[in-house]
Image (cartoon, rainbow, N blue to C red; front, side, top):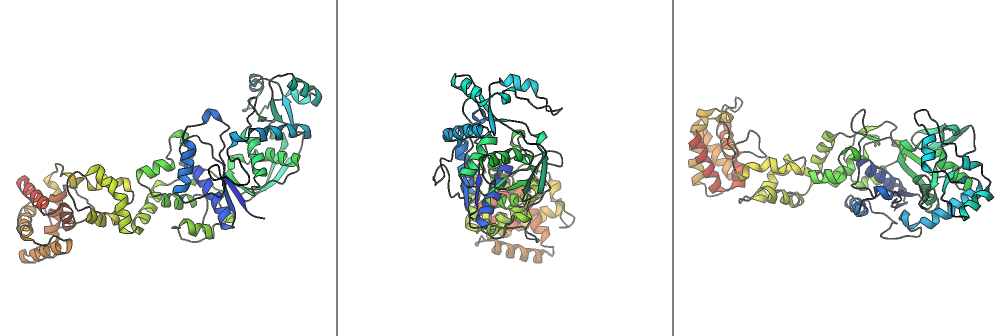
Length: 475
């Protein structure tokens, strides 16, 4: 049997991290077993539909390398792959289910149903229409009376099914409500559409949040009524913001697009979310998507919720940035340079200096703001006990360093460092007593991505001498 999984998002906005993790697990289950990954758009909830959201889904999956084998844009043998284009299919099967006794026509208003229900006391809607004869119900439908189709649940005892993560699960049939399957506008609810689509598209494994564990028996009843086999279920715990709160796009938590905009690399994001609920069985933490496809297994999925740790993601993102070819990092950094730099600087050398020291691309402007101009700073910055530097040391060594740098005819990091190292020997001082004050004078900052001579190369000779003169004037 060929493994077939599906990612079936609703086009309601940006890609939530939890949804992307579901897509990733669906993708890995398929690809680790030589199967197919299907993209299906569940757009039956028109109230939540956001224009352009489907394009965001396409763009996100492509950007992280999760290419689908079938879907709305590329077709396949099981289409259409957009639910709103399958309306007639759902209607056909809903009416068939009524004939089979697995559903019934309901003519009650939504207000009547809501008035009777009380979720806090677990009081469910007792549909009087359930007791109508099929002939009478059909006659009312034929007469044009508005209706919905509700599931009929007559079973007693316990529903039993197996989940690949949580094991064998039992739920009392008494706990299930006879929910709407086909709405009065002819569109299906999620509870019905996902069953019909998964069967007709021959989906073998369904990955979804563990909040659906309790409603899965309702889906299984539909499978049973039609005489179909249900797929393998893989329910996964939520991604948490902290110990008490789920990560949620409705609460403004970061989406995939938000993280990318902040300067996180898509490859790092995918690597990190793979580990939010799955472990490889060893200490390795850095995985490419191709590596994940080779080693991923459902057996190593966890039951416990995973907390989204932005610090851990930031660390991992830094690993990915440092592993990039310099040319690729420079290409990624250029938009940030253009955003915050208007004066001339050696940008290629800047990238070489910056790459080992950047964890998130969005931090670049703050790290290099001194290149544009030196902000006012206190001369107290020159004091550093470890470097044996203070204001008096700075006055002396900056003046001497300026004289050496003015005469420099080779303006490279190596050449400048050797000249200033030789100056320190001549003056009988530590290297740091020259280099530390020089770095402060050129940047006005306590911490910088690079040392004094690296900054001098980035700024160029003229700007370096100008800044030393300004620093001496302040001293």
